[in-house]
Image (cartoon, rainbow, N blue to C red):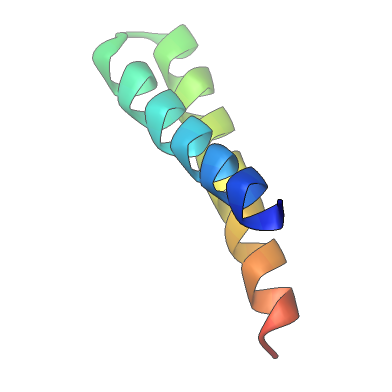
Length: 51
């Protein structure tokens, strides 16, 4: 169950980053930053388990 949640978070983060890169302006930057935030959170959760 957790693996599916991690996969969904990863796909959401990557897709937000790619979608934000296609948009020009502050909106695209905000979308890319949201995607980056999701990816950093995903990495934090992953690394917390594997200390």
